[in-house]
Length: 355
Ligand code: ZN
Ligand code: ZN
Ligand code: ZN
Image (cartoon, rainbow, N blue to C red; front, side):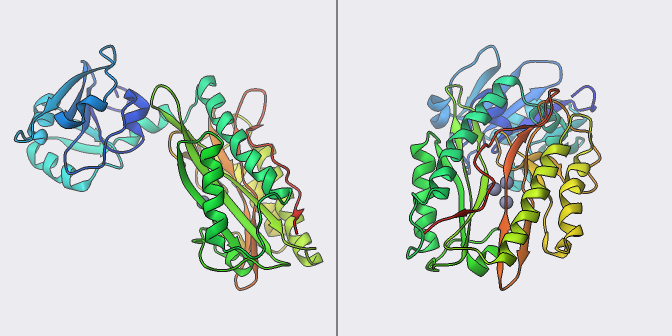
């Protein structure tokens, strides 16, 4: 905060609050807010009815429960005092921000992520191990998918998505964040919503799924993996496309050395896809950071020149999408480390042929 000239940090709903104090705010009309002055003790302003859910940490924050007839915005403004610069959590509801701006008219406002992202994006070895455990859990599901142990043909995308969701929980996650199942031409839409489409023989099935594993400290870490399988022998044209994808994904991972610009990981993957003539079909960035949020800093995208640091954890997930025809993506979570890129996912990269 001192480095960035921030006098007070205000955190409400979103991943910052549990990261720093182990408590996740209910997304409610009642304001919960951690007030962190640059010099001074942090205070958790919390509705009295939610206070029993807070694991008290007197070493980390004081509690200020508020009663139904009190004005929590006035309480926060009082605690924030005469802050000239306040940084407010990126995901806080605008209704509260609008009220805070009115209550603190002489304060300049900045995004909370200016303070929190540089901290959250560098994982400790304990955090990397928690992300590795979450990755291993979805790897086991991917393995079953690749071995034909999750029935596909004859079921709808939505049914398979629900099944993946159940397995995500059974493998130790507390929440399912998403379970994309996209068959055939639907796989050309990167974030396809699984629906009533029945999966047939001889088509690609793209599955991208992940959840959150919450530890004893109340902080959850996310998984995220994409694997494609083919329900029958893939045509040579698809095999070619998939081989290019694997080469691009592995080049992206290999490039993810400490000190390399994030955009250079994107370039390593993208240049292979472009050289094979599919450049216009790779329509998204190569990856995103992952931690207590499924998508967070650092973003692996052209224009992000920030050098990778040991402890950055992010996805490397190039895709090739041919509208009306098919699509494919391969995604692993990778930790940058001084010993080199450390892929947390270990599920097979080869295209599995399932019945
Ligand atoms: Zn995505
Ligand atoms: Zn994914
Ligand atoms: Zn992802």
